[in-house]
Image (cartoon, rainbow, N blue to C red):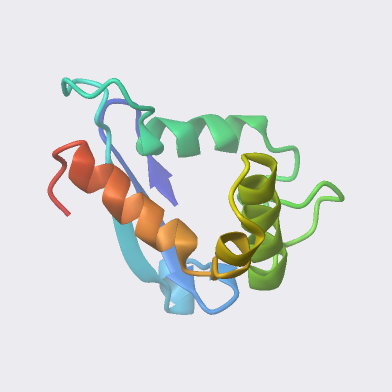
Length: 116
């Protein structure tokens, strides 16, 4: 992972999560949007802040409460639980899939007028 404030963060993703370039990770980058007119949180700076907050620098970027790796099923369950707590109908909450983060992220960047 490479990261700089005001610049960009580059993640190397592969099956099972973050990888290194040498491990065959696919490069994905997010540019800092702090200088744009957007009033939304900057995903680039959020990742940099997360890196500072995690205790195990060799562990997962977004660990479980116990410090382990989040599973797709676990994240999906968390999305569904949050939806229910926000008053979303049970049938709609159960339709949330493991791709919800991708969809929400793409919508966030599009609505922020960020080229993706």
